Image (tube, rainbow, N blue to C red; front, side):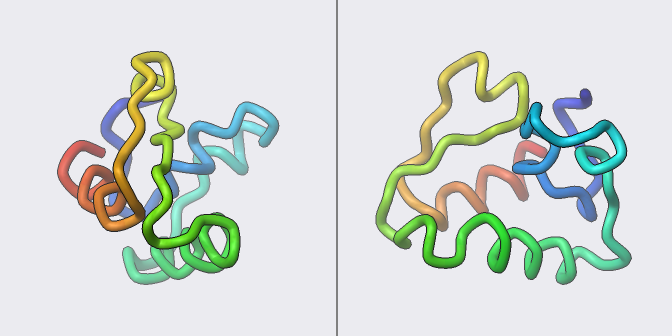
Length: 81
């Protein structure tokens, strides 16, 4: 899987080894739709805004990258992936 993904792909899905290849590489029509998906599926009520969060991309996961909170995670995804 790529370290840099399309802006319309969900980095959390890409890193989820329990999903099928098709589910992991899904692309959304718009970047805003991808972020809606991240917010509603992965973050909503699961990760408090101030909680540390792990990047689930295979490379970041192997490095054990943990970000300070959700905004750092979003910034990391925008800059790195």
